[in-house]
Length: 41
Image 1 (cartoon, rainbow, N blue to C red):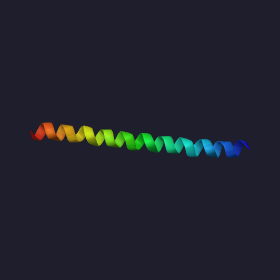
Image 2 (cartoon, rainbow, N blue to C red):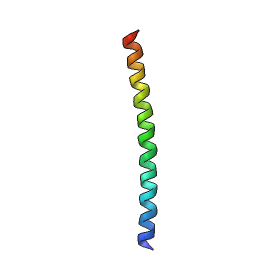
Image 3 (cartoon, helix red, strand yellow):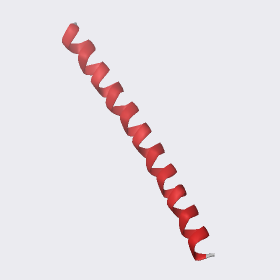
C-alpha cells in the first residue's frame, strides 16, 4: 500500500512541477517580449 501511495504522490508531484514549469516559461516569455518591445520602441 505504501509503495502505491508513493507512486501516486510522485506522479502528482511531477504533474504540479510540470504545471509550474509551463506557467513560469509563459511568464518568462511574456517578460522577454515586453523587454524586446520597450527596447525596440
